[in-house]
Image: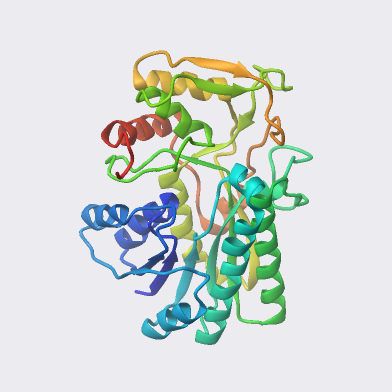
Length: 337
């Protein structure tokens, strides 16, 4: 089986993808700087899979460390998650994001070129579409990110596209996924946002566990069925399976190809709160506040390319997403701490 480098493998999606890769029989090496993740997640990946793997605490901004890492292992492919991911933080500290995400990925690509490793699955985002001109959103839509975080994803996509054109032999898949939620059904690994969560589901679950008083609903006057924002939520285990499928599909991609990962269905903020209330077993309080700058009314994926190219579809519905996220939150009210 191939050996796969998983950057950011101690993080939320990275740790779930590590489980899928290991369960499929792959050999993996995980690198993570642990700035926004915990090594406990990796201990639990080992526990869930019954398999061990090397871990290197390493930053993408350390080019010599990357060179040493690629010299130490016969990597066949890279799954690249490592990077900062909070929209609000990116607005406040854009240079942090351009350093970590763009410069870090540049260092990674240099190391891959030097080691002649040309299979890459990149963790991109639906934020590269900005406010879409139509829904569902397919991969042909124009890209116009609305935040420094989104722009780093867009710049990286463009960089990887340019490299694939200039240097034949690359097999790169850009996975643009929508809103990851849920957790491993065991409740052993899940999302651990630092501080007050920016995203809806972890915020809702912090209210459910008693760490926050009420869910903040930013605007109820959007042109949507109930006036609240509509998003495509996808279970993190489905997303992880999408990365496994993408590794297998890189052989079919000459150059660079973008692929959406989503359910193809949008849920409103109030629908998510209702589904979470059902999973928790009580009504969760919420309060309507003014719209947030930069929020859009509605986006959800056209995931037909993922079905045809990767053989992937999202299997888990909103009720399962809420149930598994609540199971994780109950077992780990303070995350891995």
